[in-house]
Length: 286
Image (tube, rainbow, N blue to C red; front, side):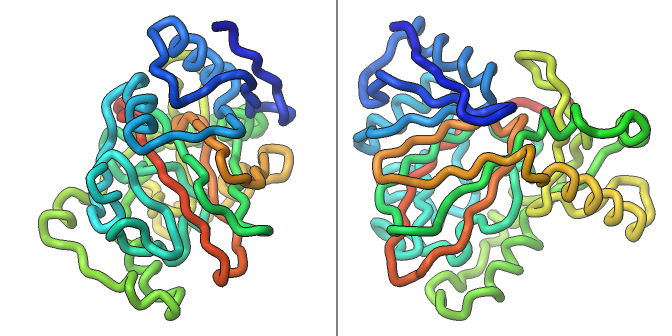
């Protein structure tokens, strides 16, 4: 297999043609896809049709699955899949705001994921896009003074503040109001990561903060630290660093969590939006 990949954004995002993700790809084919992911930061595949088994099989070619701590969102029979739906899906809880804030997946763990593979099953006729941000380009475009200022700084990441906030923002989703168990809370202890991380495979530096889960700068006054995080997030989310993906049913987007962040946009809730996501385990950021 020789991949056909077309760059569709100035700094990142490759659109892949001629690949059926439901196939049982061999090591050589997986290497081509992984190399393309390293080159582009995220890949877009159109017109896919996968069973849950095929989705998990493809994902696990890139590494073991990261199982989400909030088991209420996991697809029945497939704990490797988190169901992102405003209706619920096979016994899962509906997700009220569906990641409608800038974040990288699961940065509140000591070993955040390498990548995520999101499969669009049902999409609204308009709205519900996903915005993606190139955090490597965002780092490259920082001033030399800011690069020097943040070199060596670390930030604290936590899921619990975002989880609690999500329970307040959408009163129309009463089914989403559930409590985390003590065991789940224990799995969600705060972690510390560098504000700038170096990609373990291609050596690129990228900002590694986000408004969803980065709660403070370690060792810095709270107000000063928040001002720094706000400045970095505002810089990162400039239009020149962003790709907006308008979904069609059958689209699959595979992104590298180490160099991107993303957010969902709003849509008319009378329409169903149903996505399945697998997540590939990663390494400790350095």
